[in-house]
Image (cartoon, rainbow, N blue to C red; front, side):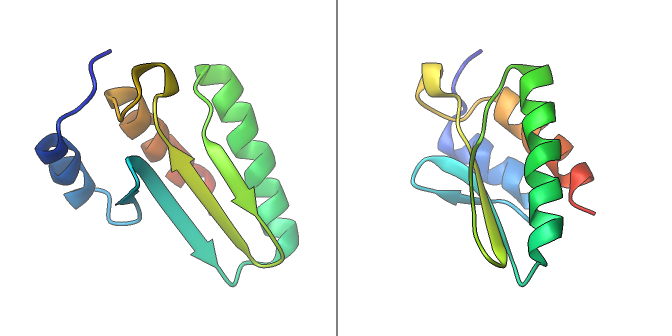
Length: 93
């Protein structure tokens, strides 16, 4: 799957306001979320990642979570990352 060009990524992010471009990765961050909710999100995102064979970087703590997407074997952002980003958002309710 080809790496997206910068203009393609920026255009895609216009339709995904929850996500930003940070250091060559798509990133979503949520703050002031109860810890039990964060734990359930991590579990759901993990199950999704396994089913898609596409694994985001996830870091979380007391009241925040950060999710980063990048296709590691392509060393950039691909359509798989955008698809995964969309699916992740459906889990964060």
